[in-house]
Length: 374
Image (cartoon, rainbow, N blue to C red; front, side, top):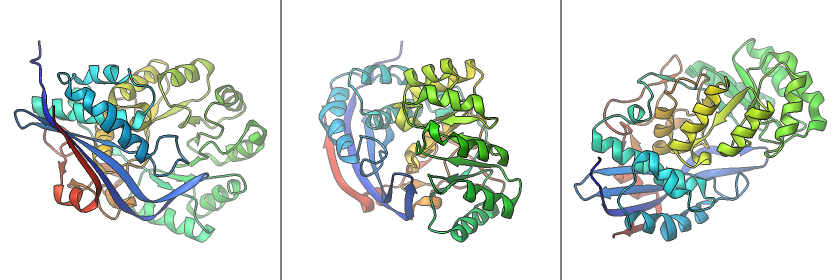
C-alpha cells in the first residue's frame, strides 16, 4: 500500500501573459492569457504543478479566471489540505463531489499527477500508460482581418513545419476561405473549425466544403446538438470532429451512441483533468473513433501535461499544442515548448512533466498570489 502523503502547503499563482496577437474565434477574442498555477508542496520537499486555464471573459465557457480562482481558494485547496493526498486515479473522483468547475479541477488534478510522478521519479507519460514518442503538432489560425493575411499565416506555419493547418470559419466566412487556401497551397493537410457557429439549416455549406478534401469539420453545430451532428454526418464524406460537444464523459458516450462524429477532440481542461481525459480516449478507442489532443490554448504547464497524455495510442491526429512562442510573448516553463523542423514536439527527459518552472517568470507575470497551509 502506498504510504499516505500530506501536503505542507499549496500556493496559487494567477499569471497573465501577453499574446502576440488576439486569439479570435467566431464568438469572441482575448489578448492576454490568464492562467492559475497550482503548486503543491510536500513535507519532504517534493512538488507538483498544475494549471487551471479558462479563457478570460465568458465567451468560451461560463467558467472564468475569477470563478476558477474563487473555487480553488475556497473549496478545492482547503479540502485537499484536510486529507492525505489522493493518488492520481482517485483525485478526479474526489473532486467530483463539487459540481462544475472543470478548469479548476484540471489544475488541481494536474498538480497531483505531477506530484506523484516526481515522487516516483518517472515521467508523467509512464504513469498515464503512454509511451515516449514525439507528438505531431498542427497550427491553428484564428479569423484573420483579410484573405492576404490568412494566406501569409498559412505560408508561415507550413514553412515552420507544422503537420496540418486548421483555419477558423464562421457564417459568411467559410467556403471562400477554404477555396483560396486550396488554390494557393494545394493538397496540404487542412481542416476547418466552426466553434459551433452553424445550425443544421446550414448543411449546404458543409456539403459544398465536402468537395475540398478536408481532414475534418470541427464542431460545425451547437454544443448540445448531438442529434443534428449525427444527421449532418450522414450527409457528408468528410468526418465531423466534436470539440465543444465533447465536454464530459457523459456527452462523449452519447455522441458515440448516436454516431454524431467520426473524430473527437479531447481537451484536458474542459474534461476536468488528465484522468477523465484518458477515460474519454479509452472510450473512443473502444468504439473505433480516433482522437486528437486539443488546447485552449494553455501556458506551458497544462500544455506539457497534455503532450504527455497525447502519447497514448488513439491520439492519431496532430495536436493543437503548438510552440510556446506561437501564441505567447513568453512562457513560465524551461525549456519552452518547441517544434522540430518536421513538425514534432519532443518531450524532455526527466520525472514528472520534464519541464521546469521558471519562478522568476511566474513572479514577473503574477497578478495575484495566495498561500495555504494545513
